[in-house]
Image 1 (cartoon, rainbow, N blue to C red):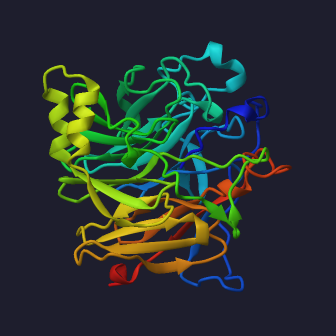
Image 2: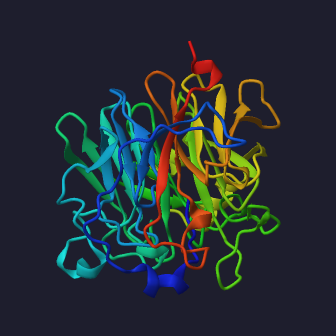
Length: 392
């Protein structure tokens, strides 16, 4: 989840935080009034977390974007409930204060999401826009880490035609065969990005069309009030949540400042990677005519489709809940699975080998972006729960 319009806070946000431990030991979470016993707290962090992913062997990885602080680590593996820099300290050694001394091509600058694929790789999306402000030159990239060797296996750099100034690459899904990556851009001009992994060729598509942009008719609220920055401005969230059907044939996405879930057949996107050079406006016009309106989710952040493709899980920040859409039955509405006041901005999903769902709470409404006097280093959590269909 992102806020591409946080530029006015840049002097405050680009401060250096050095030295503190990243996390405490896991805490056994008791249910507060109105809480749910279904939730288990896996970890509590001292910094703002967004992404989580669980590899096929059960290893858990998280990431910390540089939104309101110069977080000491960007990507980490959870070991005994504590985040350990991954794949090593060097890749995590970027600091805002010494950015001229560190190569953005080979270091994490501002990581927004992490996703493990079926080929034993961890994919890292580096938006390279600390404080969600200027994109660092040569910084935007998609990095693959081999989970057997714990070494970077591939880096796909994105030039300004894919990640221009004002962009904020947000989340990624990898095709089942490991050959294609699909990303959302939640920046000032929303878009989808499709990547041929072998060649590294990438194409930015549907930039600025209604389906990837904020819905002007939607107001994002929290605690019963419109979510606004300290200067009174509202928020604009473009294409953010993304999900891929298990067969890799259908891509889903939506804007947070929106209510509508959209989809496209993936072959309509990948076809543009091999098509002759064609004006972007023509490509977008052709694709826009094929977009399917799936239904209304309301403002939502993370999306995840379960392994059999029948259920779409949705994080619903406005009411501290996790909901589900029955795709197999072509359900028109959502069913609430968990609603709990501890889910302060449920952000990103992943599903473990046993069906357990993991979700981060990024506390965006509690951050210095939206709350005067909030701590720069914002404590956040990782939770888990088992949906009914996984309890077998």
